Amino acid sequence: MTPNYNVLIVDANRTSLALLDMMVRKLPNFSTRLHSDPMMLLSGIGEVDYDLAIFAEAMPQIDGVELARRMRAVPRLAAKPIVLAAGESADWAEHAAREAGVADVLHRPIDPVEFRARISRLAQSVGQRAEGGLERAFAGPSAEMAQHEEEYFTILSRIAGFRDRETGLHNLRMGRYCAVIAHQLGLPRDTCRALRLAAGLHDIGKAGLPDSLLSKRGTLTHEERRLMEDHTRIGHDMLCSAQSPLLRLAADIALNHHERWDGTGYPRRLKGEKIPLAGRIAAVADVFDALTSIKPYKTAWSRDNALRYLQENAGEQFDPACVAAFETGQEEIAAILLAMPDLDDSGLDAA
Image 1 (cartoon, helix red, strand yellow):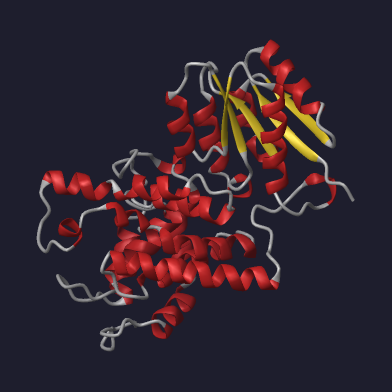
Image 2: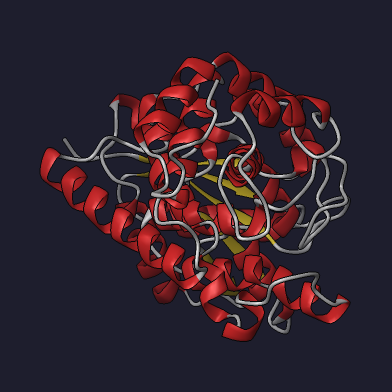
């Protein structure tokens, strides 16, 4: 059965909206849904669904980059490709769009041949469809593909840990904690699996930092702290151009796992639900594993003490819902700690 691709087009300029509509509908098996008011669209976001979206870059009240960011913060929409239709001279939009998770940027005036090729390619990357053109954010791969993905992401996670001089299992444990939180939040099983794999690359951007910084013991200077914080952007830039939904999810986590619920985190000082859900989940998992792991400069905290820290900082550093989900999954958390201790963690109190 030939898939039907549903394309959401948002442009406040009705002439441009009609032009984009016409170009999409010339493609076989494509249908469109048009909106000229992005704020009205967001007000009913619970009913929004699409296979691929095209947003104008310049719109009143909210631009296309911010609209993309808000759409991708919704778990069921997080992996669905978004194209930004930018102005001819809006080169600045390219970088901002990539940070927001936009899959492609087309500059006006849009060439119809290039448009057809790029939209068709993105639609084909969406993957297997359900009846009616709907999809799951992370459709379960075949058994063979799943095995390959497990191997690739496990190896990449270990490499990232070695570069950061982390204990070998930190990244793998952190991914499993993310899956527990996601499960307790009610996310689909395939999404939980995707988070488990992708979260292991949260610190891959540290590969772009100097050895002298990563190996320093003691307090960092203000300039060193600023350089260290760059690992979030570096990791995102490494991964965000990938076509793989898993790698693009890893890019989002790399960029956002140090944002704080109260808006004082980095690199973008996002606040509350403006932080993508994957980043909010990863923040809880990352801090918990850091607290319960032995470091050269500290002893490991007990599981109870680390959980108490998360609870005390819910609503400030962490999303309260993610902390509550983590607390509900404590039986699974304890099992992960027991099954995956660091080599020098034999005395860890996991009570």
